[in-house]
Image (cartoon, rainbow, N blue to C red; front, side, top):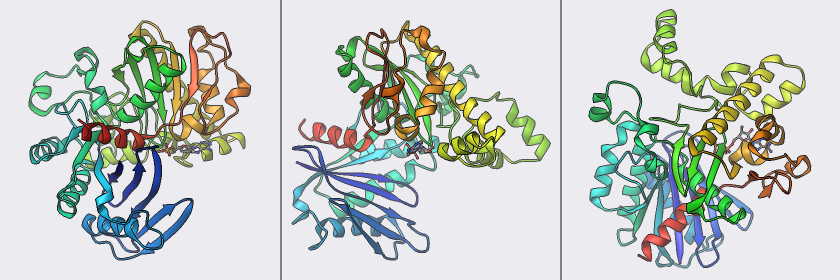
Length: 397
Ligand code: ADP
C-alpha cells in the first residue's frame, strides 16, 4: 500500500510518499512560495534533490506539480497514480468535532470549515489542499489527521478557561492543544521503551521545536497540554510568548496604541526567544550568543528552560506521578544543553541524568541512568508517518 501525505500551508505544501509495507519514504519534498514570486518545487528521492522552478499561483498547480514529479520518467517513483491508495492530510484544527482521524466526506469538509475561525491561518489552506486532491484524484480516499484530535480526551477541568461560560458555548473558547500527532507518537513509543502498557502509564512529552508544547499523557490519553485555544499559550517558543498575564494585552495596547491585530502579531511573531534576546528565534543562535556572554540571550534560554521545567512539575502533579519524560522535535531532539538545563533540579522526580547518553543529537536514546524510577528519553518525532499510518488504518477499516 502507498500513501501520499500532504501538509498544505498558506504558501507551501510539504509531501511524503510512503510505502506502507516497510514504512519507507519513497519520495518527499516541498512546494514553496505558492502565489508569490520565485515559486519552486523541491523533490527528494534516495537523497537526490531536484529543484523545479515554475510559476505556482495556487495549490491546484502546486499539487499537480507534486503528482508530475512522482510520475516523472527520471526522478519519479510511480508508474501511474493508480499505485497511490490514499492521501492523508494534516489538518491543524478539528475543534470539538474530531477526536480521531477521519475519512473525508463532503460533510467532514463542511465541519472543518465550521471550525476554521479557530485557526484562520491554517485550516483554510489545509482545506484547499483537500479540495484540490478531491478534484485531481476523485476516486482516491482522503483522510484528515488533526493536530488537536489527541487532546480531545482532556477533561473539562483542564480545557475550561475561567471566563464567562457563554464564550465557550457561543464561540468554542476553550483549550484545544496542538502537536497531537507528535505527542501521541512519542508517548506510545515511550510506553514501549519502558515496557509498560500504554493504557497504564504516565508520560510527559515535551515537543520542543520552533513551536513548542508539553503534554500529560495518562493511560494512553492526553489529559492536559500547554497550548490552548491557539498555539500561543504555554511554553516560550521561537517567536511566541506563551503564558503571560492577560492584562498585559490591553495595557500594551493602550501604551503603544496598538490594534488587536498588531498586539497579536507581536505576541506570535516578535516575542519568545526572539523577543527576549533581540537576536534570533533559533535556539542555536541563542546558545551561541549566550556562550559569547550576551546576557539577554542567556536570559532567553533561562526563561525557556524554566517554563518547561514548571510544566513538567505541573503535569507530574496532574497525573499523580510520572513514569517517563520524553524530549522531541528540533530542540528536544538536538539541543543537549537545553535538555540538561530543563532537567537540572528535577532529579527528585526519580532519575539521574546520564550526561554521556545525553551528549547525542537526533536519535532515540534513554538519557536517564540505569536504575532510575522515572525514565527520560529522546525520541525523534515523525508526524508524517503517523498521518500515513492513520490513513492506512482507516483504509483497511
Ligand atoms: P518547527 O516547529 O518549525 O517544526 P523544529 O522542530 O524544526 O521546528 O525545531 C526548530 C528548532 O530546533 C530551532 O530552534 C533550532 O535551533 C532547533 N535545532 C535544530 N537542530 C538543532 C541542533 N542540531 N542543535 C540545537 N538545536 C537545534
